[in-house]
Length: 223
Length: 83
Image (cartoon, rainbow over all chains, first blue to last red; front, side, top):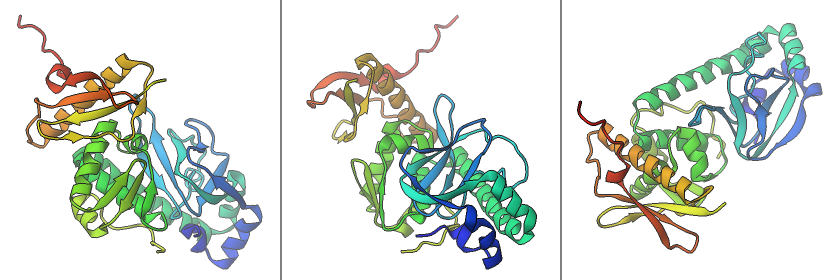
């Protein structure tokens, strides 16, 4: 259980960050970034899942970050723009954080470090593009299948602790839509869901069920 | 805040909400049920499936008693009268 982005750094680049990295507990609902506030810290989750959520009258997830990446990518892009959206934990985990200014200094010292982080930004952009496509074109059931696969990519084991309310926010629909879609996926034998737990039984079936909305993992599954 | 469970009743079966949700009052739960019915009908219509106008939202309290029923048909927004 370790952050894959940090693990990918060359030894010299890791040494630039290590003195400033601090371990942090990331309980469910912990807010990592408030909307329209300067990014003071960036987080590298080792486990758990953070969501970037656009809060309009019906909130909707626009980005998912786990051990595959980091929060606060505006820092990597080199500007001081405030994020439009909130980022908070939706599956509890642990991680490491460092002050945004320390990351800026390290990036200024090492273009190799910058390259690795920029590559992640590219992957994250691809994810948001695919999310836009899925939200615009997919059925709720297909979008739920895609979302469960993305979450499954970022956890150990097959069981996700999630309430229907959370899932509704993730997909920007009402709870009844989630209940219907969960039962449909369960009927097909792809998942089992009990109250606030969803267990993935058949990944390939879910990939098929996402009807192309889920392309390929951007995360290396460790189990 | 009272907790209500919003089940979807079809002619033959019930799609159970086994989690429930806290609402300020029953009226708030009824508004959510109507909005949920509209969303389910919209999704069905979008993909060319039957609307399911015969379905109903059952609102149950924590004792599992049905305290209100919102038929899908009643949740449909009214068209303005013809001019």
